Image (cartoon, rainbow, N blue to C red):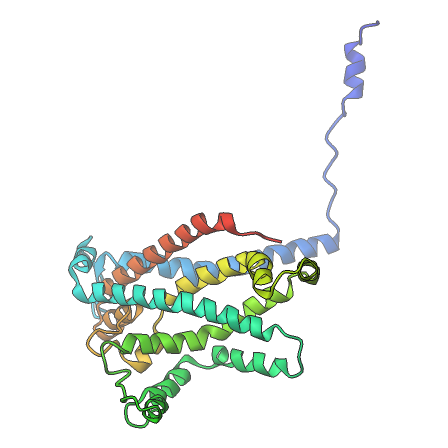
Length: 314
């Protein structure tokens, strides 16, 4: 077999890398548009998210009261947080609020979504009715529920009296105030989770249910073996967003109870608001906000690492 000459090998190699083809005017416009679509949101994210977060992180290590320049105090705010009984109460109330609102809201929203996933006349009216609280202002909803929880003229106590039960001081009783706020929050957020579950239910292929019916599966078996597994991704999304939202509750607490009676309904964000904007302790409020950020970040990571393996995307 004849040896291949080096000169022949050189001739088989590409003589040079093809020159990059110049972009036409349309391609250049598309390129500039693409760069613009990236730069604008990045600039907005930088101005409205990264810089404020960085400044809040800096303030958490200072004593800043608006009337003078920040004074660097190191970890003093965080050491005081560790001994602050009100902050520990706010942490406990926020955790109880999340433990009550998240599972209750998810179960009820899935139940309502299953009921509204029916092809009957007028179902759109019911779907709209359940979604209306989501688009209603939190302040307006809270005011309405304050009237419903009123001790003297509230509709809830009127109902209790009709069945022979004594009236309750819903928002003025330390035992009932937090559950009352939680009840209102479940009612307000029910439509959001419901509409997401409803969209996921309508995406489940119908032939799976038809095959199960042929095999004689009951309604419960179809729900347990088909519906629930195929809703894992939706459930995971709603669970993570609900936990984050629960730890940021503020509007309903601020309007309905102002954190009272006593500190029965005070939450972390409510304490951040009081310290930062009412007592003008911006440094301490920023430290509380940084702790809240750390809690939400850790919970999100825990949810992600422990629940994502069970999620099936289809």
